[in-house]
Length: 233
Image 1 (cartoon, one colour):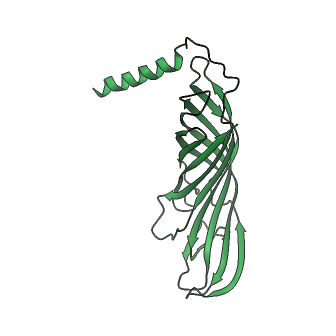
Image 2 (cartoon, one colour):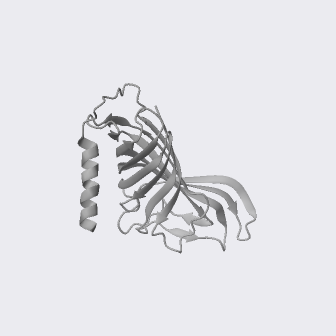
Protein backbone atom coordinates (compact mmCIF):
# COMPACT_ATOMS: atom_id res chain seq x y z
CA UNK A 1 0.00 0.00 0.00
CA UNK A 2 2.80 2.42 0.90
CA UNK A 3 4.59 1.64 -2.38
CA UNK A 4 1.38 2.26 -4.29
CA UNK A 5 0.76 5.62 -2.61
CA UNK A 6 4.35 6.68 -3.24
CA UNK A 7 4.07 5.70 -6.89
CA UNK A 8 0.75 7.55 -7.20
CA UNK A 9 2.18 10.76 -5.70
CA UNK A 10 5.22 10.61 -7.99
CA UNK A 11 3.01 9.98 -11.02
CA UNK A 12 0.76 12.96 -10.21
CA UNK A 13 3.78 15.20 -9.67
CA UNK A 14 5.48 14.19 -12.92
CA UNK A 15 2.21 14.50 -14.86
CA UNK A 16 1.61 17.99 -13.46
CA UNK A 17 5.17 19.11 -14.07
CA UNK A 18 5.59 17.92 -17.64
CA UNK A 19 2.11 17.89 -19.18
CA UNK A 20 1.48 20.61 -21.76
CA UNK A 21 -1.29 23.10 -20.99
CA UNK A 22 -3.91 23.21 -23.70
CA UNK A 23 -4.29 26.94 -23.24
CA UNK A 24 -1.14 28.99 -23.40
CA UNK A 25 -0.85 31.47 -20.51
CA UNK A 26 0.70 34.91 -20.93
CA UNK A 27 3.24 35.24 -18.10
CA UNK A 28 4.50 38.72 -19.02
CA UNK A 29 2.65 40.30 -16.07
CA UNK A 30 3.25 37.44 -13.66
CA UNK A 31 4.26 38.32 -10.10
CA UNK A 32 7.67 36.66 -9.75
CA UNK A 33 8.29 37.23 -6.03
CA UNK A 34 11.71 38.67 -6.78
CA UNK A 35 12.00 40.22 -3.31
CA UNK A 36 11.65 38.20 -0.10
CA UNK A 37 11.74 39.88 3.31
CA UNK A 38 11.57 37.58 6.34
CA UNK A 39 11.21 38.14 10.09
CA UNK A 40 11.03 35.16 12.42
CA UNK A 41 11.65 33.70 15.85
CA UNK A 42 14.98 31.86 16.12
CA UNK A 43 16.16 29.16 18.51
CA UNK A 44 19.09 26.75 18.80
CA UNK A 45 18.41 23.03 18.46
CA UNK A 46 20.60 21.09 20.88
CA UNK A 47 21.29 24.02 23.24
CA UNK A 48 22.59 22.80 26.64
CA UNK A 49 20.50 23.56 29.74
CA UNK A 50 23.48 25.43 31.20
CA UNK A 51 23.16 28.21 28.60
CA UNK A 52 20.63 30.82 29.70
CA UNK A 53 19.02 31.90 26.43
CA UNK A 54 15.76 33.80 26.86
CA UNK A 55 13.90 36.72 25.36
CA UNK A 56 12.91 37.41 21.76
CA UNK A 57 15.64 35.88 19.60
CA UNK A 58 14.97 36.62 15.95
CA UNK A 59 16.08 36.29 12.35
CA UNK A 60 15.88 39.03 9.74
CA UNK A 61 16.52 38.02 6.12
CA UNK A 62 16.36 39.76 2.74
CA UNK A 63 16.74 37.98 -0.61
CA UNK A 64 16.62 39.06 -4.25
CA UNK A 65 15.41 36.07 -6.29
CA UNK A 66 15.33 35.31 -10.01
CA UNK A 67 12.29 33.18 -10.87
CA UNK A 68 12.12 30.85 -13.90
CA UNK A 69 8.70 29.24 -14.58
CA UNK A 70 8.53 25.82 -16.23
CA UNK A 71 7.48 26.06 -19.89
CA UNK A 72 5.46 22.88 -19.52
CA UNK A 73 3.60 24.07 -16.40
CA UNK A 74 3.48 27.78 -15.40
CA UNK A 75 2.40 26.86 -11.88
CA UNK A 76 5.88 25.49 -11.22
CA UNK A 77 9.16 27.39 -11.19
CA UNK A 78 12.72 27.43 -9.91
CA UNK A 79 14.15 30.49 -8.18
CA UNK A 80 17.57 31.47 -6.90
CA UNK A 81 19.49 34.59 -5.97
CA UNK A 82 21.66 36.33 -3.36
CA UNK A 83 20.66 37.69 0.01
CA UNK A 84 21.65 38.62 3.54
CA UNK A 85 20.50 36.57 6.54
CA UNK A 86 21.02 37.49 10.19
CA UNK A 87 20.33 35.73 13.48
CA UNK A 88 20.08 37.55 16.82
CA UNK A 89 20.18 35.25 19.88
CA UNK A 90 19.39 36.81 23.27
CA UNK A 91 20.98 35.75 26.58
CA UNK A 92 20.18 36.89 30.11
CA UNK A 93 22.88 37.58 32.71
CA UNK A 94 25.33 35.57 30.63
CA UNK A 95 28.77 36.50 29.36
CA UNK A 96 29.46 35.20 25.86
CA UNK A 97 33.26 35.08 25.50
CA UNK A 98 33.40 35.61 21.76
CA UNK A 99 36.90 37.15 21.79
CA UNK A 100 38.49 35.04 24.50
CA UNK A 101 41.81 33.36 23.68
CA UNK A 102 40.57 29.84 24.35
CA UNK A 103 39.90 26.61 22.48
CA UNK A 104 36.12 27.02 22.73
CA UNK A 105 33.60 29.80 23.22
CA UNK A 106 32.27 30.06 26.80
CA UNK A 107 28.78 31.00 27.99
CA UNK A 108 29.22 31.99 31.66
CA UNK A 109 26.28 32.46 34.04
CA UNK A 110 26.96 35.70 35.94
CA UNK A 111 23.65 36.06 37.79
CA UNK A 112 25.46 35.93 41.17
CA UNK A 113 27.91 38.71 40.32
CA UNK A 114 28.11 41.88 38.23
CA UNK A 115 26.60 41.20 34.82
CA UNK A 116 25.05 42.72 31.76
CA UNK A 117 21.27 42.61 31.82
CA UNK A 118 21.05 41.47 28.23
CA UNK A 119 23.54 40.05 25.74
CA UNK A 120 22.88 39.53 22.05
CA UNK A 121 24.93 37.21 19.86
CA UNK A 122 24.44 38.24 16.24
CA UNK A 123 25.63 36.51 13.07
CA UNK A 124 25.25 37.68 9.48
CA UNK A 125 25.61 35.54 6.35
CA UNK A 126 25.77 36.12 2.63
CA UNK A 127 23.40 33.44 1.35
CA UNK A 128 22.33 31.91 -1.95
CA UNK A 129 18.91 30.23 -1.65
CA UNK A 130 17.51 27.88 -4.29
CA UNK A 131 13.74 27.26 -4.27
CA UNK A 132 11.35 24.94 -6.07
CA UNK A 133 8.06 26.86 -6.20
CA UNK A 134 4.40 26.05 -6.77
CA UNK A 135 1.77 28.76 -7.33
CA UNK A 136 -1.90 27.77 -7.70
CA UNK A 137 -2.59 31.03 -9.54
CA UNK A 138 0.48 32.22 -11.50
CA UNK A 139 -1.30 35.41 -12.64
CA UNK A 140 -2.63 36.58 -9.27
CA UNK A 141 -3.08 35.89 -5.60
CA UNK A 142 -3.42 32.26 -4.59
CA UNK A 143 -1.93 29.40 -2.62
CA UNK A 144 1.87 29.23 -2.74
CA UNK A 145 4.38 26.62 -1.69
CA UNK A 146 8.17 26.60 -1.88
CA UNK A 147 10.89 24.25 -0.69
CA UNK A 148 14.64 24.53 -1.07
CA UNK A 149 18.10 24.96 0.43
CA UNK A 150 20.36 27.89 1.32
CA UNK A 151 24.15 27.98 1.15
CA UNK A 152 25.75 30.75 3.16
CA UNK A 153 29.12 32.18 4.15
CA UNK A 154 29.71 34.01 7.43
CA UNK A 155 30.21 37.77 7.12
CA UNK A 156 30.17 38.87 10.75
CA UNK A 157 29.74 37.56 14.29
CA UNK A 158 29.55 39.87 17.29
CA UNK A 159 28.04 40.35 20.74
CA UNK A 160 26.31 43.42 22.13
CA UNK A 161 26.07 43.72 25.92
CA UNK A 162 23.73 46.28 27.47
CA UNK A 163 23.21 47.72 30.99
CA UNK A 164 25.78 46.61 33.56
CA UNK A 165 24.06 45.50 36.80
CA UNK A 166 25.10 44.10 40.19
CA UNK A 167 24.06 40.69 41.50
CA UNK A 168 20.82 42.18 42.83
CA UNK A 169 19.98 43.55 39.36
CA UNK A 170 20.71 47.12 40.44
CA UNK A 171 21.98 49.37 37.64
CA UNK A 172 25.72 50.12 37.81
CA UNK A 173 26.25 51.73 34.42
CA UNK A 174 23.87 52.18 31.50
CA UNK A 175 26.23 51.59 28.62
CA UNK A 176 26.82 49.16 25.77
CA UNK A 177 29.83 46.95 25.03
CA UNK A 178 30.39 45.31 21.64
CA UNK A 179 32.85 42.53 20.77
CA UNK A 180 33.36 40.85 17.38
CA UNK A 181 35.15 37.68 16.29
CA UNK A 182 34.49 34.81 13.85
CA UNK A 183 37.13 32.41 15.20
CA UNK A 184 34.76 29.94 16.89
CA UNK A 185 32.19 29.79 14.10
CA UNK A 186 31.91 27.60 11.03
CA UNK A 187 32.56 29.87 8.07
CA UNK A 188 29.93 28.20 5.86
CA UNK A 189 26.47 26.85 6.49
CA UNK A 190 23.82 24.80 4.72
CA UNK A 191 20.14 25.18 5.62
CA UNK A 192 16.83 23.75 4.48
CA UNK A 193 13.78 25.98 4.05
CA UNK A 194 10.03 25.73 3.49
CA UNK A 195 7.39 28.37 2.71
CA UNK A 196 3.58 28.03 2.61
CA UNK A 197 1.03 30.80 2.25
CA UNK A 198 -1.30 32.90 0.14
CA UNK A 199 -0.54 35.88 -2.08
CA UNK A 200 2.23 38.11 -0.79
CA UNK A 201 2.41 36.46 2.63
CA UNK A 202 3.86 33.05 3.47
CA UNK A 203 4.89 31.34 6.67
CA UNK A 204 8.45 30.08 6.52
CA UNK A 205 10.59 27.63 8.41
CA UNK A 206 14.33 27.04 8.15
CA UNK A 207 16.76 24.64 9.80
CA UNK A 208 20.55 24.79 9.68
CA UNK A 209 22.03 21.37 8.88
CA UNK A 210 25.60 22.34 9.71
CA UNK A 211 26.59 23.15 13.33
CA UNK A 212 26.95 26.82 14.22
CA UNK A 213 30.35 26.38 15.86
CA UNK A 214 33.46 24.62 14.66
CA UNK A 215 34.10 21.08 15.88
CA UNK A 216 35.25 21.35 19.50
CA UNK A 217 34.90 25.16 19.53
CA UNK A 218 31.47 25.30 21.14
CA UNK A 219 28.25 23.41 21.83
CA UNK A 220 26.80 21.43 18.92
CA UNK A 221 23.83 23.67 18.18
CA UNK A 222 21.90 24.24 14.96
CA UNK A 223 19.78 27.39 14.53
CA UNK A 224 16.21 27.09 13.29
CA UNK A 225 13.56 29.75 12.76
CA UNK A 226 9.85 30.13 12.06
CA UNK A 227 8.33 33.35 10.82
CA UNK A 228 6.62 35.43 8.17
CA UNK A 229 7.75 36.20 4.62
CA UNK A 230 6.59 39.24 2.66
CA UNK A 231 7.18 38.78 -1.07
CA UNK A 232 6.71 41.04 -4.06
CA UNK A 233 7.83 42.44 -7.41
